[in-house]
Length: 122
Image 1 (tube, rainbow, N blue to C red):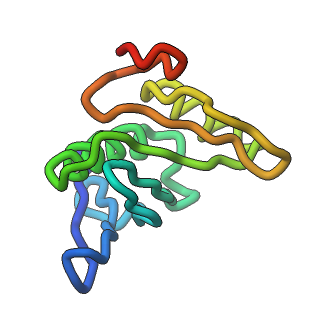
Image 2 (cartoon, rainbow, N blue to C red):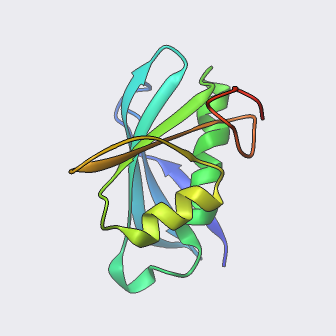
Image 3 (cartoon, helix red, strand yellow):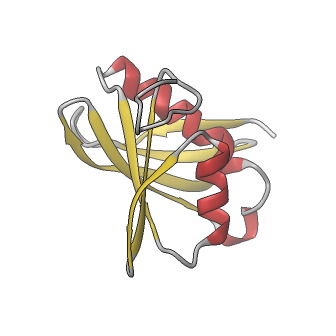
């Protein structure tokens, strides 16, 4: 399956992309926050297309795009019961940095497949 991102923001700072899979609309990614070199995002894949590797392929595309924009770190908040998203982000090299009843907080450096945030070593 070929996965790509199509920028759909109305302005350069409006960081939104459609996810396309084999030429069809498959979901979207929105960058919610951009502070310093860290950004956070939300991703959604159409229910009928989930568990096909679309998010796992689309997120590295986003990471490369954000690196081009000067970002060094990605952060995400995941609902504690969303086992699929937690597993995906762990597989992409994210490490848990905090937790509360409403969210699991995870981060990763963009130029590093995985990181130990305690020692800041890739």
